[in-house]
Length: 253
Ligand code: NDP
Image (tube, rainbow, N blue to C red):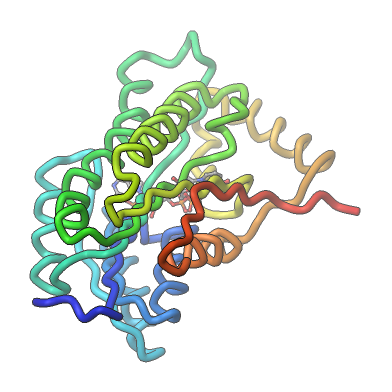
């Protein structure tokens, strides 16, 4: 399908909950046709229904960013439904907390696979078309942990530091190509993230640490704060590039 100059199909990975789900709703409300991808495609389908009920355009397909076949099948399905993708929001991610010398290397690698290589698989699937058409937006959802490592999140920190390194190199490679590459770096945000930490090796310690941090420093953001930042970045007028936005909770007065 040819792309209408004002029609900008967007892909959101990890769109079944939290920041990704809210970003899909926000982009659709702003007029972007949105393709939602996650492993729990039933949850994505519920969000698609909501978007359509509000007059927006959306589709959902299963996506596991750690599985090359799944990424390829997702990209193919999106191309069939929407044609050329103009906006990629690489958002899928997860933290499995643990004390570094107790986390086995395979589990460490699994987290890098999701938080770093998963983003690269999406780049390989969607960016060549953008470069060819000389238009597009690629946005990586990073984390404040990418620049301020936290205890018990070593593999997550490594993945997100790597993600930002990749994004910065990509920004330079694609400068002047018509494809903008941006990073949105969330601070602590209420989402499904952390709901499985009770069973994790460092779960109790981490939960205590978060409560301590919360009491002392901050409130958590709502996913909508991130969704609005993401929509702002990918809606910036041509000629303007919002390279990096860090979004943090305002400290209590
Ligand atoms: P959620 O746990 O609510 O959302 C994570 C999303 O990622 C889900 O939709 C999940 O869907 C998806 N996902 C997980 N694994 C895969 C996979 N293998 N393939 C495809 N999708 C996957 O957390 P958030 O909304 O908070 O997280 C969104 C992003 O924000 C992440 O990159 C996270 O690192 C980042 N972030 C979050 C912060 C926070 O405090 N919450 C702070 C800083 C950054 P499913 O399980 O259905 O596949």
